[in-house]
Length: 229
Ligand SMILES: CC(=O)N[C@H](C=O)[C@@H](O)[C@H](O)[C@H](O)COP(=O)(O)O
Image (cartoon, rainbow, N blue to C red; front, top):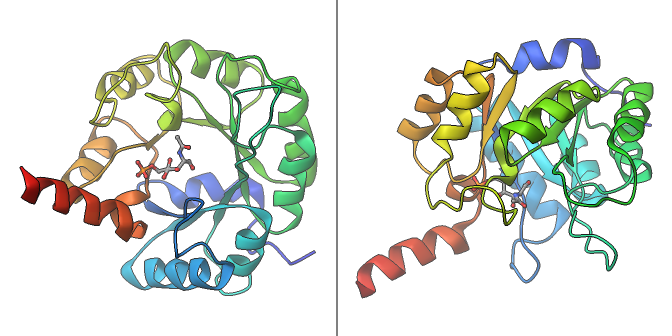
């Protein structure tokens, strides 16, 4: 097992106020290759990222091999029996930690899931890693933290049918989490430096940015569509 540079205890404090760059490539993207993802991660580190969010065992392994930055690991698994796709099982969560992710992200929405959340959280904690619970509403955040999550992320807002469907970050959800005094990560559609800074002002512990930094295909589409008018 590769050595984790930090114990799980320290990592959330170390990330406070920082930028976490999500280095992921969608199926079909020409960037979908562990070597390329590891180079994106190094570019993010050079630019001042405090941490990285990485999908899949191969990518976590490749990124762990080149950097000591904290990694938030996840899997994306399509299953027939559930709509939950971000790290749906404890076995996947534990494997991510074993490969060197200090934090494991998993779907903590209220949708039917293959395994109970509390058991998954306990399995991650047994490895020494921390749990980031990806939620879409305040209620889901409250349940996840009660079940033992270390922090929640606004990741799933807009990706469950009952959450706000927005093209912007979910500022209202951030305000609700902040008002409730819950520890949260801002993630999802933070597409400019000003928006990332605003998320911290609204109480986020740290900020995850993906597409705007590491998905040139997506960013190109934004520009191309703007030119088409
Ligand atoms: C909903 C879901 O599956 N989100 C994924 C979670 O890891 C990623 O595809 C996103 O890129 C990430 O959340 C960062 O968001 P944005 O790319 O908008 O900055």
